[in-house]
Length: 130
Image (cartoon, rainbow, N blue to C red):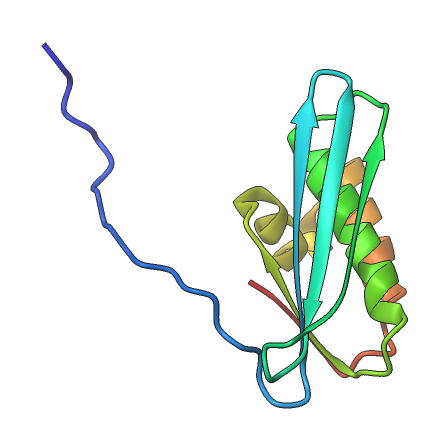
């Protein structure tokens, strides 16, 4: 006998959308495999064209939340290379999105680190995290 799911199934189709005019969209993701971690970052302009990308690996054991945060740090480094004031970060890690959006109330080590990042990106007029 299979138990009925307590969470309602709400299928939704997600598709990639171009960023707003004058905005750079950053997509990043991370992976954890035993004692190695990796990340990838891709930047697109408002017409949907690829601008720049990067990837990296660490021989370090980290939890998935910390690897996603590391990927976020690396994406911030790439964004600083552009002469833009509007950035949209598209993140698939709900935990990290929630921590970023509520970072002022987060008193954990990760919350402190996120606050530190966000204070260092004050050159941008508009930063959106999705």
